[in-house]
Length: 116
Length: 114
Image (tube, rainbow over all chains, first blue to last red):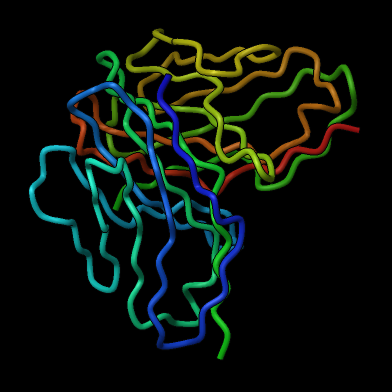
């Protein structure tokens, strides 16, 4: 069965420092996609970054980058130069590649707190 | 910008009531999803739909049903609300058939069943 694991319930980082949020996944599919979402206290899920299983380069979007290590089945999110507004819940998710559906499987999330 | 709206941000219902949660998206997306979010459990898929009148069960469909009569609208129904259905409910939509397509989420409905 496909599964996403986020082992860090909470993380702290000082403003302007970089932080890595861990995500490991389990799948037997060759083709899959990995996503990171941010959920501020307002509740809305915000898409941050996507990595396809066949993408040779790690995805980057502004201050966000995805450290994709296929052999280790890990897809860690790196946030550079943290800002106070980065304080939120972060979820890693994987596209279910078992059929023709577009379902996402989510991890349990990591709460990031950025302090001055 | 894609906009996904949900009918209520906060809702309080009594045990046994029938509850309707409405979700509307304005970007002509084929896929629509209902999740519930509980602390420590992440998001769990209740039901999804990839076309009008089509629906498929997710991981936790028990106690819920859905309706999709129009492409832009996807309703979640709690036939007889129970206290263990107190949760945050999130609706999402996406384009069909592309692994790269992200899901767009609504603001969520925090439902309390007393």
